[in-house]
Length: 130
Image (cartoon, rainbow, N blue to C red; front, side):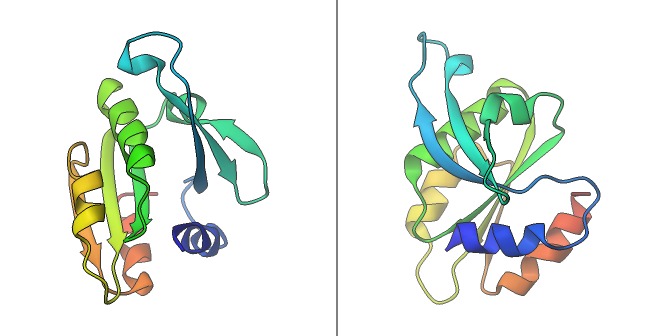
C-alpha cells in the first residue's frame, strides 16, 4: 500500500523531491552502519541505491503503512542517522492500530506522525519543502 501512495504522490508537483519505493536491503560489506545500503525503485521503474539518493540530501521522508517492513525502516533510519540527515516518518494507519509501524520507525525518525487519511500527506511534504 505504501508504494501505491508514493506513486500517486510522485505525480504531483513538488520542489525537486524524489519519490522512491524501498525494494531490498543489500548485504553490508563491513561491520560499519555506513556500509548498510538498499535498492530503491523510482516510479518509472529505474533502480537506484539508498546511499546515492542520500548523498547531498537534507531530509528523507518515509511513508509507511501498518504493513511496514522493519528491516527497511532500520536501514533507512540508520543510514539517515549516520549521515546526520533529518528523517521523518509518516504512517498511514486509516483504521488499523499502528503500533508495529511506530516501533519500526521511532528509533531514528526525528519527526513521526500517524495519519488517518492519505490526503494529509501533501501538506506535510510541502511544509518539509519536498
